[in-house]
Image 1: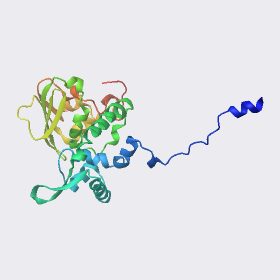
Image 2: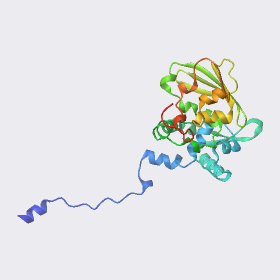
Image 3: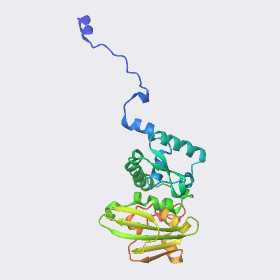
Image 4: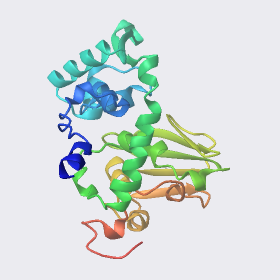
Amino acid sequence: MASQISGQMPRAHPPAPIPKPGGVFDPVARALDLIGDKWTLVLVRHLLGGPVGFQHLRLRTGITARVLSARLRQLAAKGLVETVTGDGGRSVYAVTDRGRELAPIVAALARWYVHHAVEDLDTDVSRFTETSPLSILESLPFLLREDRARGADVTFEIRLTGTGGGAWSVHIVDGECRVTPGFAPKADVRYTADARTWCGVALGLVDPRKALASGELSKEGGSKAMDHYFHQIADFSRSPRSGRGGSR
């Protein structure tokens, strides 16, 4: 009887071997084989705004010349970046149509960071000491509060002096944000400050009320304020340099 029962038991199969990662069809993993290194999406993100030169990419990212040169060659080989002729006949870098298809991924990644790494995980922004006004301004579309911006039509002008200064127009219309260099003659609200002060306010390292009271930051125009329409990079009252707890 015992021999009959044992004869009916299913035959044991040897455990499946652990596969080699590259031999597994996984669209996410295989896509990251192509675009998952440290700099690919960063460089694509900066080129989505238009063709720029080698030195511009270095200034915007801080990548060493050797690494940047190697990454650009790799991106060109993958068909994501190409060299085009810019103003004055000099060579500049641009995204290809294939590279431009990564725009939604770049935007989603940036918004994930804003919503989770910054807001939920309380990222210490005091380490962002090399941030330029342009870095913050170019990030505004990712920081937009779409619920508050829906149906809005407002233009802010940012005038900054000092290193990294300039003038920019920030236009919010029906849930979208567009940032362009230059003055905004019909701006609803105009902000003026030193570039360092404005970066400090934007990063949550400088109290905006004190900056306004001292004249380091000035605001002209209507009652609308930029912080109503954008996620805050940090809450000043919780900043490591504020020395206070609680919320603003």
